[in-house]
Length: 92
Image (cartoon, rainbow, N blue to C red; front, side, top):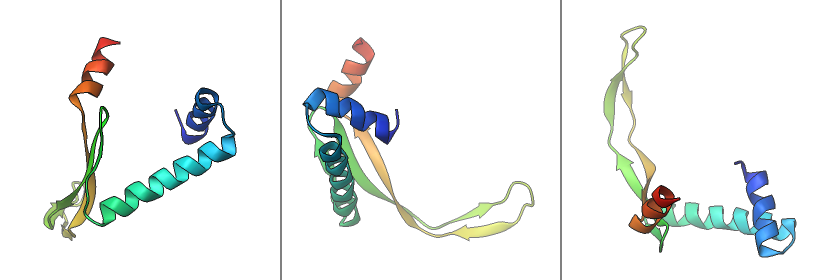
């Protein structure tokens, strides 16, 4: 499911305009990014936790050429689903 089909489905379920839903999704993403950039975890009860995770600098090797290069440290996002979500998905 892509963003457009997700917004259409949410529009049906919430009985509001597609413009409002798209604006909500945009602001949701912006807020999530802002919180993670600040180093905060974002927890949604019954869904899971999005948290920043710093990957340290390391050496990597190109498998085709064998050339070694340094990969800079960076912040990635980890998602840990809640037990409720995992159970709900597996119960179907």
